[in-house]
Length: 113
Length: 117
View 1 (cartoon, rainbow over the protein chains, first blue to last red):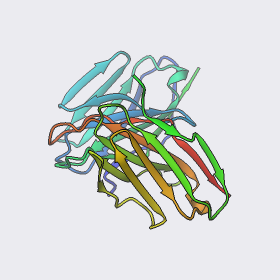
View 2: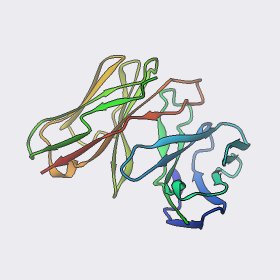
View 3: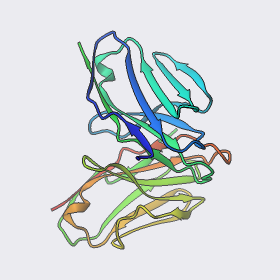
C-alpha cells in the first residue's frame, strides 16, 4: 500500500462547478497535511495546509481532514480554467523532526470552459 | 521576500560530465530538501538537511549523486558521472522546522531542468 494515495485523474469538471480532490494516507500518526498545485512546467506551489480535523477555508479552496478515516480532501468552488493543474497531496512522517513529507502522485484537474 | 533560488534553470550536458545544481533556501529556514521529478516516478525526495546536517539520504539513487550544505544559505547537488537516465527536473525546497509532531510547509524553487544526452 502506498503511503499517500491520490486518483491520478484526469478529473474533468465544467467551469463554475465544484472540483473535489481526494487523498488517503496510511500512517495514523501523521499530523500535517498539505495541498500543492503544480502547473505544467512549473514548480509545486503551496495552496493549503491543515493540521486539525474538520474544514479549513481559504477563498474558493476548502481543505477537509478526517483523521479517523485517514482522509484529506480539497474542494475548489466555482472552478475556473486557470485552476487546471496537477494537485499534489503531502503528508508528514509521524515523529520525524526533520520536516520530511511524503507526496502523492498527484491528481490532474481539467476545468472546461 | 525572495523565495528559494535555484540555478541553473536549464542544463544540457553530455553523458559522463559532472553536473552541479545549486540552491539558496529562504532566509531563516533551517530545513532543505532536494527532490527529483519525472513523469514515471513523480516527485521523489533525494536528501534533506536540518541545520546544514544531512538527515536522510536514503533517496539518493546511487553513489554518483552527492549533496552538500556548507552553510545555511547554500546547498549543492552533484552528479558525477551523469547518465541519460538522470534527466529530470530537480527541485530544491526549504521550510522552517516546526514543532515535534507537526511540520511547516515546504516552499519550492523553480527547479532545474536537466537533460543528459
